[in-house]
Image (cartoon, rainbow, N blue to C red; front, side, top):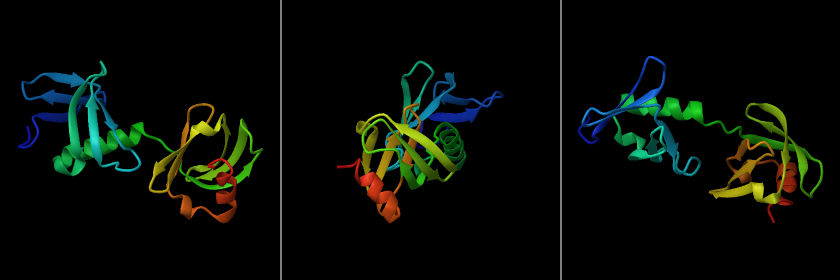
Length: 158
């Protein structure tokens, strides 16, 4: 156990995250959930058990011992996947649904935007776009987009 936390995290033989409480009670298959995945990814992390109940709250990852930080960062990276949009190439139309061809940090792809409500401003210039299949795309900084991309996106952000 740590000095500041009354629990321990480890991985079992199957690669699942295990939470062990101070009384020795273990819970396998723990899921870390970020409260603010884009705005403050290192702060406000909840450890949730398989039954959906919160087991622990972590204000900041830096407060944990290095081993536990590494485990949580690994688990979060495996769980979270937000392709980052770098450029909007084309948009089929300015009414929804519309098909967008975009360049992401993972390569070129096409997404279908069902409605303008699927574009959310996250603050600090970030935008999250959810496609018709529920896949989320991130634009980390609107001001970093090129002029063409910004012009296309502005039509939906009015």
